[in-house]
Length: 262
Image 1: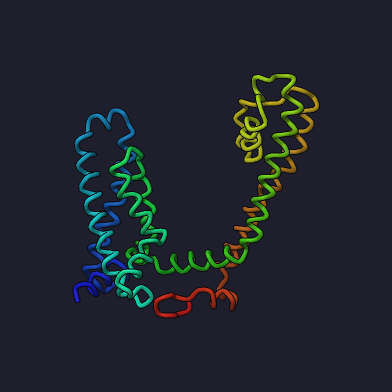
Image 2: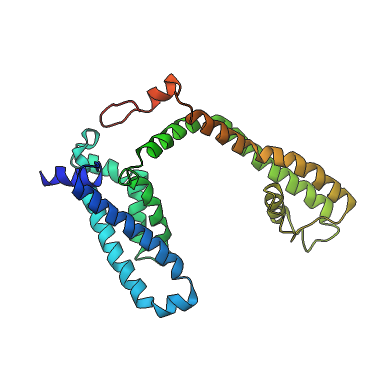
């Protein structure tokens, strides 16, 4: 009975469940507070002044998140597909979000500060905020992107080829003129990345006529290549926002617990 009640609070909170709303709203506030404190702690004047306060907040938050994680693992067997007392809990613990929770908890005892990852847990608490339409839209977008994964893979490969080819060729053209800037092909990757993403810091610029001509031509071509993923994602967003999705989309959106089609 207690396990079922905790499952309803932690995994399937309903708007009418006041305990679920209170508990999960506290978790949301705690996650947001932690994200803010992680940022403020890097400010030298605040970090040294409120060091003890930040330490206690981090310790208490980690303890609460540990209890929440243990409770989620304990009650997850209430789902039919995770009903086995051992393998069901293990399958749940190996899912991305529980692994992220465990990573953040363990990082408290390590020199690597990964507390900023806690803010990603807000994705699991969308239902608490009653953003059902947003969650459904996110699900449709995920399905639409999955249908275009091959196009996305091709576009990423083209981007990598473009970066490598341009870096290698510009290195051949510019290295003899100023070897202290274009020191190697891997070093020229930085120029290719900042040029094709239109950042252009100006720390690496060609000075030879051949290099300038090549950069002008290749930059125009590279912008088109780097725009491919944006076009694919935009098409997926437009499709997911349509009033009526495709039949195959609806077939893909099936709840693993109840079999309901989204």
